[in-house]
Structures are given as structure tokens and as C-alpha cells.
Amino acid sequence: MSKQKNQATSSETVQETRTRIIAAAYKVLAEKGYEATTLREISKAADAAPGLVHYYFGGKDQLLVEVLKAVSERYTRTPEQLMQSTDTQDMLPMVLQQPIDQIIEEPEWYRLRHELFALGLHNTLMAPKVRELLAEGRESIAMSIENTLGATTVEPTILATMLLAFFDGLALQKIMDPELDISMFATVLANILRSFEQH
Image 1 (tube, helix red, strand yellow):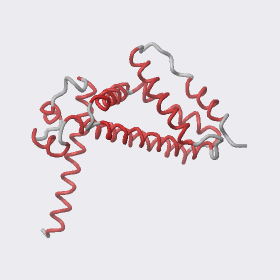
Image 2 (tube, rainbow, N blue to C red; image 1 turned 180 degrees about the vertical axis):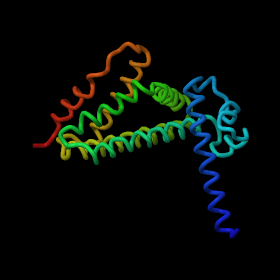
Image 3 (spheres, one colour; image 1 turned 90 degrees about the horizontal axis):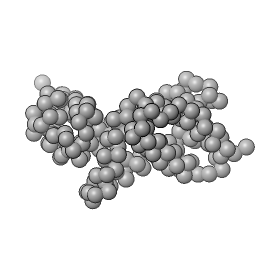
């Protein structure tokens, strides 16, 4: 086997192992929470040598960032797919419904986000990672706003910042009060955002 082929195979193996560890970490962190989870438990769930988790991610803090990024990327693709398959007029409420569905169906993801926020507040090494994750979220939401509303009277980044704060805050309320009904928020938000359309 050529050296180049060996490197390609090795690179694929590394990526597969990283992906497996991230998936296992999400499962364990979601079940036990950040504080109660150990790297040993994650490596066992990933069927990976304990040293690999530390080798690839450096520690539990960085692994949490990678877990949240992986899930964020998955949810970023959903609005893009909707935009390709949905009539423009119906798109805005559907795009806004997606994060609300995520709050209902995957509250553990938002719990992990809030744990990451707390880490960023108290850990100067984690603060830049949290800022980066929030910036990526704003950028993704701003792009969705531009694609669904077109030109707006307010900068899309400002609207994106408000929406990101709204979804994170709504998720916290829903986590703390599971009986809270959030089913109508996409429609209300769509009406608010349409008021910023340039006519």
C-alpha cells in the first residue's frame, strides 16, 4: 500500500474515531450532565481507548464544545433544506419552528449549551470557545433571515442576536417548566420579523 493511501486511510480512521467519540459524549453528557460525566465513561461508550479522548480533544471542556458544534451543524442544515423545498411565503414560520421543535425534542442539547455558557463565565480558557459558538449561531440565523425575508429595515445580525437570545432563553424556561406551552411561538416570531421587511 502506498504512503499516500496509508495517510488517507489513517485520516479516515481518525475522523471516524472522533465522530464516534463525539456521538458517545453527546449521549453520556445528555444522560448525566457535564459535572457527573467522566472521560472514562465517554471512552467506554465510544469503544475507544481512554487516552484517545484526551488525545483528540484535550479534555472534557473542549469535547463539550465539539459536541455542541456537531449538533449545531446538523441543525444548520435543516433550514437550508427547507429553503430548497418550500414555498417562500410558508418558509419563515417553518424555519422558526425548527429550533422550537429542537427545544421540545432535544432539551438535553440546550441543557448542555447552558452548561457550556456557565463554563465560559467562570473559565477564561473556555470563554473564547463560547464566543465562537455564539458567533457561529448568529451568523447562521442571520443567513436564514436574509434568505427568508430578503432586505430588512434592521441589520440581519441584530435580528439574529435577538433570536438567538430568545431561543436560548425559551429553552431554559421550557427545561425548568416542562409544562410550558411553546407551540405558538413560531407564528408570533414570524409576524414580528415580517414587520422588519423592507417593502
